[in-house]
Amino acid sequence: MASLNSYTQIGRREDLIDKLVQLGDSKAKLVSSFKMRTNTSTMLTEWQDYELATPTANAQVQGFTVTGTYTVRSRRSNYVQIMSTPVEVDDTTIENMNVAGVRNEWEFQTSTKFVEHKRDLEWALINNSTSATGVSATASASGQALGMFGAVTTNVSAPAASSSVFTEDEFIDLIRKIYDATGDPADGLQFHSGTLNVKRVTDFTGINKTMSVGPGDSVHNRQVTTILTNFGSVSLIPNIMVGNSKFGLFDFTTWAYVSKVAPKFKLLGRTGDSQAGYWKSEWSLHWLSERSNATMSGIATA
Image 1: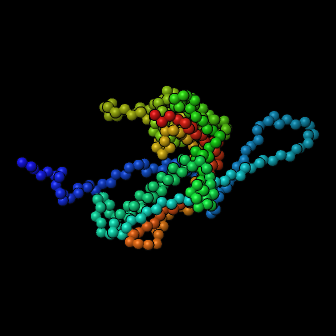
Image 2: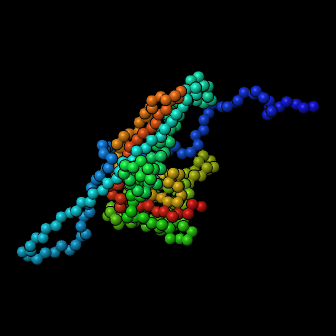
Image 3: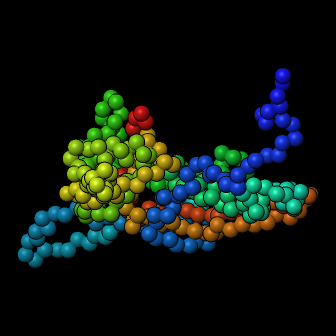
């Protein structure tokens, strides 16, 4: 005798719980770490820096004649990048649609697109390797601001091992290079990289592990959040958007996030039975002392 079961029953209503699960990281850890934020009204942002002369004996004879010198300033620049994240929902979907876990489809879509817009900014700060004008309509000439990893050029390195796994000495040596380049302890550095590299640093043998013992000695947590070295301190920041093929050692007091247009949502005019709009922002980045930072690339991801 055949029995009707619920798997084959036709007309059975959907049983969907009122809970939405967001897949993917919503954090923008580089964006949220900037200590300095400033504004601009131009599409090319510029600033100046200078270097002090190399120290010398500076010994003079009696009655010496002064020879004039001066300190040269360098002019730096980075273009403003325009970002846009569009959204469109038809009116039938917006009006009188009962969706599990969603009270208002339009509000859900616009808020979700804002998170995606912020993630695009984080991606650009990590991966943008050039600064371009964006005066051409072609995609290859889109306006682009140079990102943090591209801006650091002095203290850059790669693992020496054939396995492409950096060692504790190589890690500490990059911090030392920052000290040698600036003359100041690199206190307050943030290490941004994927979780595998955070684990690799945590596993260094020269780092003392902090053990937290739970009730009844049943829980033991190893936690390393800050590393103290002779050349500065480093906080470990897991950042999955940076990934495991590279890491950055960033002093965020030496960077400035430049905003031309803060993230703003704009509605588009109606052309049919739907509602459309987009998030827009215009931004740039200033590296006020790129020598105060360091990066490593070419790291094994497994």
